Image 1 (cartoon, rainbow, N blue to C red):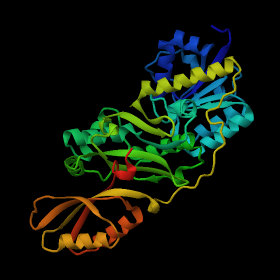
Image 2 (cartoon, rainbow, N blue to C red):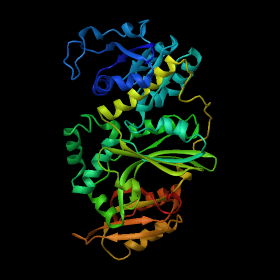
Image 3 (spheres, helix red, strand yellow):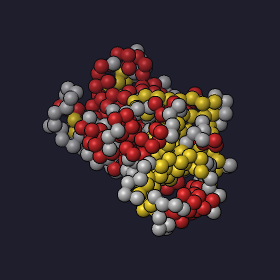
Image 4 (cartoon, one colour):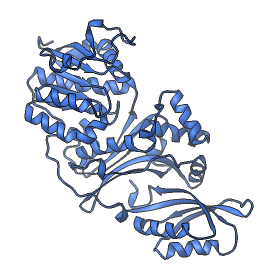
Length: 435
């Protein structure tokens, strides 16, 4: 082992922070051998130093003052596990300006200010590592940066939020409704008390922004991502989807389209035979399509204390090796390009539509005319037995330009015979969008 010592300061000691501290203890010998240095935990920033922790550590390590870490000359590496944007950004900026190395698992921060922090690291001689910010325990940053560097990446597509995938899995496998599945996810610790960030798609969008910078070298931000959540998905939609040979997943999709970039997060029907369709519960997966390697898929637990701690400690090892052997590193050295983002209206998709309509002659003809006027052709139709003169109809279109589809949908909403639009989702795996 090297005689080099690396002092570490932790910002935060929550679920992931506890996992990191635990892993540093459990695998201490092998971690230090791989790091090529003696890793010394110097200080841990917490709100309440008297609070009991699942990892036994000396009381002297805990502090409620950030300056005890940021201005400590014995600390070379700062590990940020606080979450949120502020004051995490302020702390990391101070750390990088002083030339310290930084490890973070903060997806919100990296999506919004990652390019600024990386540039600051470059200017000040520091470095920032962020493997845990996008895939939890799944290695994604290093493969995109190193292993697939010879490729032109044309598409990334995946399930990158464990909370929503758990909910949709339970709804699909057990037929339970959204609220019941959400409650179960919260009881099992897969969902926070306030899960709006997950349910509305923002968590997946943050991760997609970070991944798109690595995959495409683009400078896209959160304002460039089309985001829709799973709040409107029902057990009824999942039942109809299965009849049609599909399931419903919250997908994050980034792709090159005719010189543009498209970044979108949305619930979509996915063919049951597609590998992503069998990704259940809290598991995540990402498909990457490169022009040399073809299609590759990364799969594993995308969240949780120990899976995310695994990624964070891997970054700690890398950062420590860089410090010990004086290796200059940075996980995004290539300058980012301002690649234009394509308007959603110009994208081509297939659509699933579930609606309630009066069960009388001429309704199907009116629907067909509304779609036909906008050059939308129908691929599949399902109709349930009518109750009290109202029928539930499910329609799946062929590929269509999205602007045309939504114009047709607006006209359908205004038809007197249409009582309610219940569900509108994109369909993946047909023609152009098939992987």
